[in-house]
Amino acid sequence: MPFEGRQRAAALDRCWSIYLSLTSVFILPEDFHVEFPIVAESVLITGALQVTVAIGSDLSLALREEYGFDPRQRLTVSRYSYNLIDVSGNNVLRADNLPFHRTDYRRRLLSNPPHHLHDEKDRIHSFSGELGEFVARAEKILLSR
Amino acid sequence: MATRKTPQRMTKKQFVKIVTSGTLSADRAIGNMVDELQRYERKYGMRSEVFYALIPGTPAEDQQDFVNWAICYRSYFRALQSKFPFKELSRYAI
Image (tube, rainbow over all chains, first blue to last red; front, top):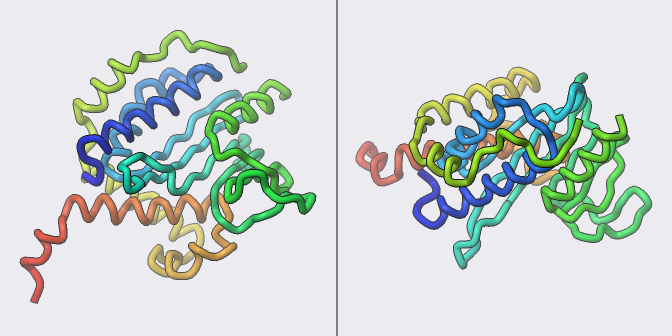
């Protein structure tokens, strides 16, 4: 397995924080609570998290994170892709940390590059890189529908 | 639709217990990744090796599928390498 000892504990902590972020904001299908531990097990084997969950009748969250460890053995999210998808499969909102954007769609510098958001029209916005911010934005969109 | 505090939420203790009981095998996890890689290969008409040599690291990667494909490809090799460590494979070296 790629993660051993403390690394496994850190990966499990990350999974747990994601579970808390989602379940404290949305009412999720019962299946999610059964399947999420399997998702976490997969993290321990593959070093990456992949989870998709319906958060409403016409919206789903698809989260993907790839993990690494810094020299002090702290878990880092080396790459992520957070997506809010509608029933037709269109991206309503997505965030990632690919290093190809420095400015937002108004040509202002991103506040926390390489983290950025793509809106429904694929315009670039600043983003903190925190899953909590993405979940809050997704909740706002869900409530506005 | 969105509300606070889902009642059926498990506790951290339950979560850790389920995860550490180990119901998912490495073979199954690798199999799932192979399925996903093949879905992308069919969708884009390109083998994963070719995709990985051409797209990641370029601005073309900035699409949901491509980010996920690249992560899946790296994860697949990570899982495979830990299942078949280099030391084990080295005995087959000519």
